[in-house]
Image 1 (tube, rainbow, N blue to C red):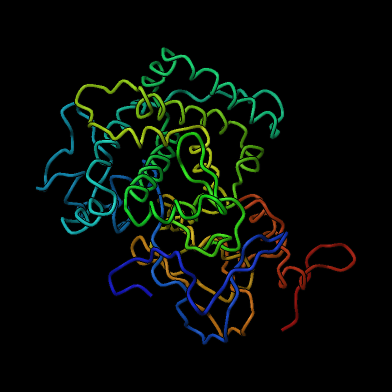
Image 2 (tube, rainbow, N blue to C red):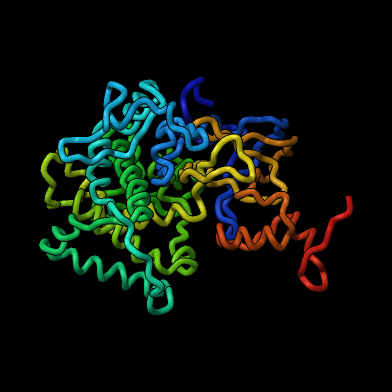
Length: 418
């Protein structure tokens, strides 16, 4: 467990749990020994990347995620300004979209993410549409298949061979959803860059290349199948990026459910490539950037980050959590994503600021799977739970509770006697 006040950067499995791999359920946590109720399983888990939706950004602290029902008098600092009361604008007039409770929250965010990220976000926010365009009823043409998705991205790759086209991408204006998702991608790739830039992370990555990972032409290490989420097949600890990138991608499931998102995703890549990628033309007043960040902005890497979101992200909910609580955004916690779902979970999640804790709700036997509840489905009927989980997480739940409540003759619901 990390020391008080620190968030976990877990690359070594805690001794009281381990990960098993199931051909149908993927990687999942199991207890290595009997656990008492109230056992803290992972300590304070910090997100690898996140985004706060634009409609809440002026009402939520970017560091501790405090939200006061739409009131914002508690937010006293903006972006990287050292004094309260400024407008957070750079020389070119764009704010970074960051608000903080006070100097403590601001300093914590800047220390972790890096001061240069503020300039990156300012430049990204300059690409946000000032007025939303009218929505059209036009549906994407053609069925969404794996081949169709590859063709769409292949067309983007072909177009980016022309420098003039890439320069044009720098002038794209993003819808709010696209800009919010672009922030999530940019923070993830910048986090990877900082991780690779540290001596320990570089050594860890180099040591894994022959047996547990592959490196693309962009230089970003990507893991292949490994024994668990904490170590590679060679038994050496994974970097945080490798754990993040190894999470199951639900790209195709998301696009089948919402075909219009494919166009949003390609536009997100085009904007990032045009503004921050290799040979991009920086706008006046933009910060200087390491070429290493530019090298990370590739189709493969952006698709990896976007594919991790559906099915792995945790909603950032207004606290205390109630039925009418607002969803303020989402965050991805790599080591927490190995908890599978159960409609009668033995683990609950607790949010403290931007961190999550995972605590057992009852005694757990050695070898028993450790499960949380995805969403807020525990009090729903079996049919309602199935619909919610299929729509939001792309799977049919077959946990012991759902199987026990299945009607043998019809497959419908039945009420268990207590």
